[in-house]
Length: 145
Image (cartoon, rainbow, N blue to C red; front, side, top):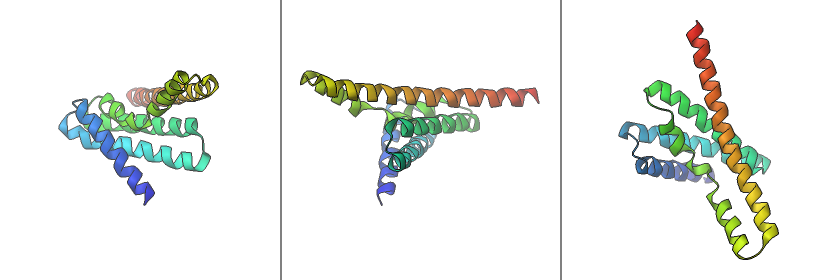
């Protein structure tokens, strides 16, 4: 039941941001699916490994690969799917708690949470970059044939 709830909430939040970003109406559901599937892989990986960074990397890689695949299928830019789909993975709470610890003069907790947040952000960008490189390399191979 918890997995189903996680899927629904991530799907709805991704759709909300897709609408906020003025995505075309026929791309909103696809963006929601991309975000929900990426979040589900994150959630399952985190439950198995208890590692935020690795789970975020796999979720972002999934979002990137699905976004690139849907972009080719629907003949639309991949950013329509990736931008909204990555929202559930963004470490907003980590940044908030980093600032909270700084305001409370708890510098060791702020440093620990800040470094974790930076690693999560780096995992997101690395996952998207790797998926983009993978997609472009497949495109080059297909053009040579």
